[in-house]
Image 1 (cartoon, one colour):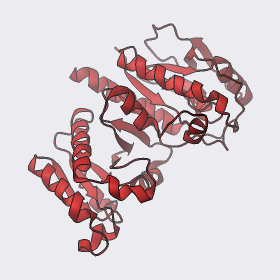
Image 2 (image 1 turned 60 degrees about the vertical axis):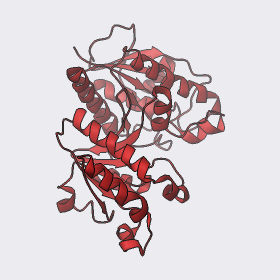
Image 3 (image 1 turned 90 degrees about the vertical axis):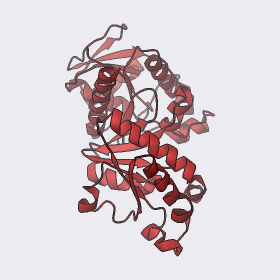
Length: 327
């Protein structure tokens, strides 16, 4: 039986609705249900000259039909204009996430794929929102770890959406052990890697240079690595972040744990911006996403590349298949 993937169309003024329309012509080994405003999708399709058959989701979709997008209609508060954010549609965006999460927890859907949202406009509208990763963790009770994937390159994060000045205090031996446990577990169960090899980055230049360029490696990172190695995990480091991504070093590991957002993500986005996928580990559900933002400057232009969304759906289907096989 094919998994049924639910796709949220994201910020209505961004590229999310367009990307949802563009992937309708692809072939997927899953059923696909898009949550969004049917009128918005129809209007955007006409603007861009896209011929997509928008069909209502009746709860029984069991396959993806190329050229067709099954849509569960959720009305906007106000019409959306490409590139123009509107706080009045913030509740609509959150509502799509709520529906996707509830449906997946309830077994209606096998996995969630999310198009990008705009954190700033959600917060301006009084909807506190740090990110999808944190949102789904709060809704499901999971222990989230953000990981981006492109090809064989997998980069997980010890901290996610934090100001840089707060990163050091957030990196503790305890939190790193928790993150490494989730990363190791999901690499084993979701990717089928029998003994994952994980490289852990240092926080400071040259991994602290023996304490001369910072002592977080000595105080927090090395003790966490030692503790997890005693538990039998294949964890190594701390390694300097400026050399761990060199190909001959990288080839020795199945995943890299970066200490903060902009330490790891620039590398993976450079390696595969149009094909990278954001995966939330540590949840009781499968959730993947595109690796980019709302791209307001591209909304409505027809120039947005759907490659990351295609890859996110394909990976979600693969992980859902594996979940079903392991159940």
